[in-house]
View 1: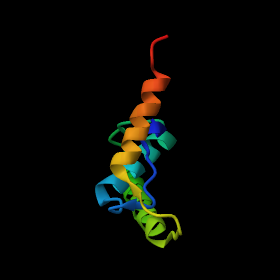
View 2: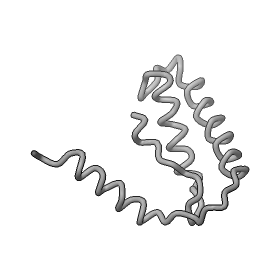
View 3: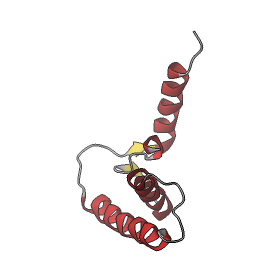
Amino acid sequence: MCRNIHPLHNFEPAATDDEVHAAALQFVRKVSGSTKPSKANAEAFERAVVEIAHITRHLLDDLVTNAPPKDREVEAAKARERAARRYATV
């Protein structure tokens, strides 16, 4: 599950609220051990996602770097290349 959480810092354009929410959702799923909570746990699950997304947004807004912003397309191409090497048939 956690391999779906992607770095969100230092990209141009900045991470969207949807990307932050998706990362928070994946984190809560991993920690809770559940991809879909029961009705009894749904409220706590969703509240955790909202709170983690909120804190993640604050973190991203507060982080500073001297490195130039990364390009999403270049990083995606690198990830595809790594995956191709990793899953290549021998």
